[in-house]
Length: 113
Image (cartoon, rainbow, N blue to C red; front, side):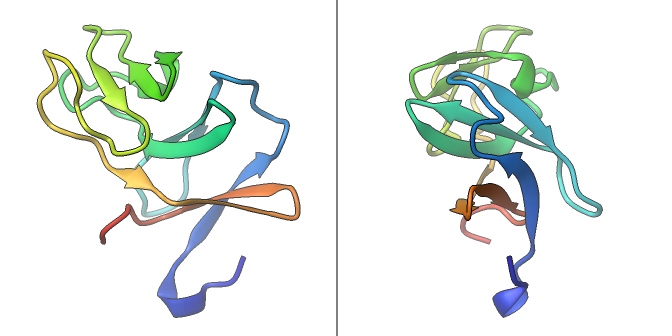
């Protein structure tokens, strides 16, 4: 992946590394820790930290295109980052995901930034 337009992307592994409903933590220097999910056949990347309880969302439970935080049960939409249920009220960032030649890349900056 090129650094075209000053966008940096981090390799997150290969297609087939994640099973449906699975998650993987993505780290790169100077960037927030992100979680990559495979849900309903698509890849989604969001902040790995719950906006309510500071728990790792990658340890949560995927339900359709939502992730349930293991700490207090808050649900977040994997597509938009929206907090869907209490106790969370603040959304989490989402990150673009690309697949190129079987390799998965997550952009280092969130959507809309």
